[in-house]
Image 1: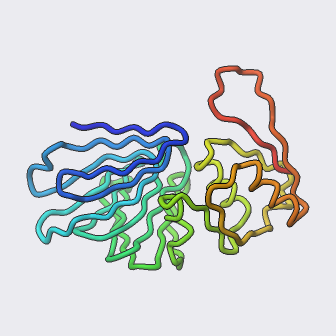
Image 2: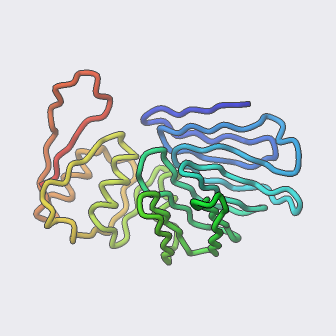
Length: 223
């Protein structure tokens, strides 16, 4: 087995044994067989990655994700976000069709299919699966070093910033949840981006000191 880890602030692209290319966001763990033997090409993912899968009509490509779920294709481009905590698992198809399989209490997989411009979000806490229409531009902009917001809700904006800059946000003013933002950022520092938000809205922010010196992530309060 081959194991790939990416640290905070690190994005990498890797060529898999079948010439599939995967690009990973920081803080990812990927495991796979170095040969892809048999009739299935399978990888185990904890984190977020973009896959450009080499087409093979008889050899499925399966991404095993936390919470008894997996994404299955034969050849397509798609993005997967799947962490081991209680956060939702999401996948969106960029090219081709994608199948999201969720194992139920009886041990059987429930299958949901999506086409390009669609995004599936599975909540492991409630078992809900929701489908959204999206261009996919915002979801995969990270692989090109960009952050693209298109009328994006504030909580999703903070989620994307947290992944990009390895920061934990605390939204103390719940009234701000109704805010949304549109804009594109490339190489700006986090402080500069947060200042744009402050200037364009009523949002204020500050760093929170942690008593635990072992804490790896900085905390920012948004109020």
